Image 1: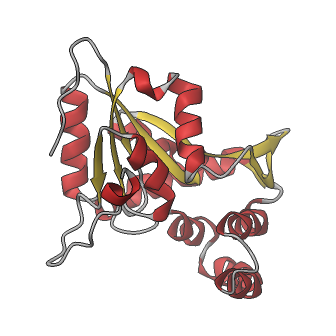
Image 2 (image 1 turned 180 degrees about the horizontal axis):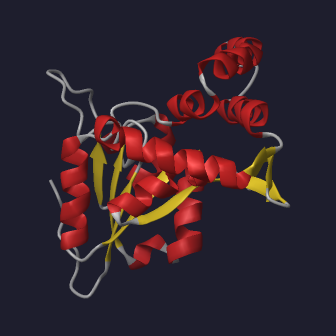
Length: 219
């Protein structure tokens, strides 16, 4: 049941991106688009062993992501990535986005809420999507030195507790807001548990939707 915000309390509406507003992950397809199939395939070969180690719990998801970013983004021009991100958004926006998710974002904007994406995907890739949606953006930040990406994450991967921390860095204490949140993976649990109105896989079309973990988290 959706709770109503208290009078004079601003609503903050936070959407995860990959899998929530989109039909699937956006970052790996972006890398394939930006680098081309041959270069992408060649670089992905370097991820085989780290991926196996992650599956065996020898590496964390965050560590695997750092290897992925280093493999593809080290010494790459920041402006080139920005241009590719714009082109990627222009080409795949309609195919990638869930129509129900787009309607929900528009409804939150129309309601007067503060609306933002909060995603583990790199901000540099998602910026054109946030601009097209007309909302804010909080994502994983990549280190840039003298116009080139270093292949390192600046700060922390924006998932799990870091989503809450990054939101508070931008908007202040979340208890000052009526927080509405949408997510679909383990990386969204902390965000959803902090929200008065959590929405688990809300836009997924499934005959048998998976049980929300949020009720158990709030017990």
